Length: 66
Image (cartoon, rainbow, N blue to C red; front, top):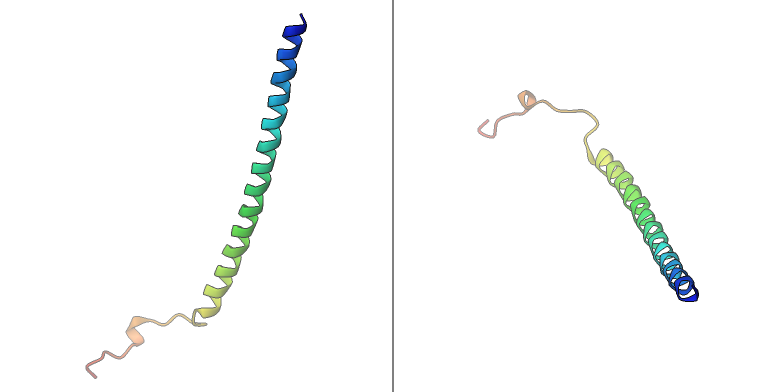
């Protein structure tokens, strides 16, 4: 009976260690996701700022041979 209890305690300890590692991994992944989302927001803002205020039509363009 004591041997069986030791095996259960050992498995429980390993499960707790694995759970802690998974929690750390999830936490780090969520931080990275948050960083990437912020970078996307920043990039979208930069693209919007670099675009001309009004869209130009190709019909308005003068061909190069004129």
